[in-house]
Image (cartoon, rainbow, N blue to C red; front, side):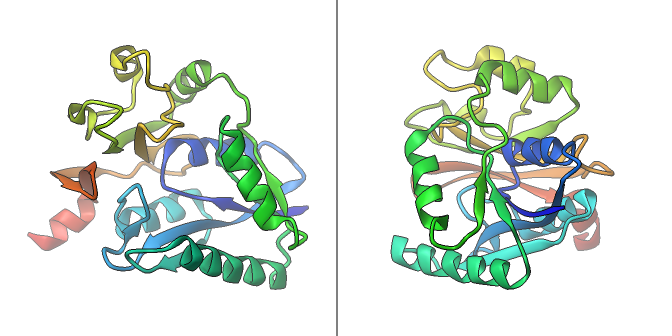
Length: 227
């Protein structure tokens, strides 16, 4: 069995990568490698709360491998923290790290370069899937997600908080990739064939931070505990 870490952002692409990896008999996904913004206790870039991230890990039955990042975080700090995570992975017998990247060659080349000297194999289970078909296959396959981050320079802020569904895909401008691969939007998965149960979400505020629009969600159980 090949022991694989999965780079996990809480979004649809990594979740679908998990689903596909689990269909390969020679692969065991042993952890979800996630960068956490320690200032806000949220998934870096996506802004997903740690409580949702933890619920995802439970539903996926895979342990979290959190990588704490300072805020703000320089590229030097990021690479230092990720190198430490790779060192841990080597010690724990991890053979490969899988990524949910789709078609950005520069991003793939960067990941391959960072892992080149470690002996850890990079895997790209979604690579070169046509994104229009992939997005609809995810939805048809039972994946459910919310749009949690929007880059307003590429997509109207009104898309923040929306359901990732066929209606959203139909509403996207032609300039926007259906999977948001160029950073137009990011998502948070709450249901799908990679999970043993769905995660009930409660919508919160929509805020602007660092030039991006974030839609905040909490697990419903957390909302009930806070009442």
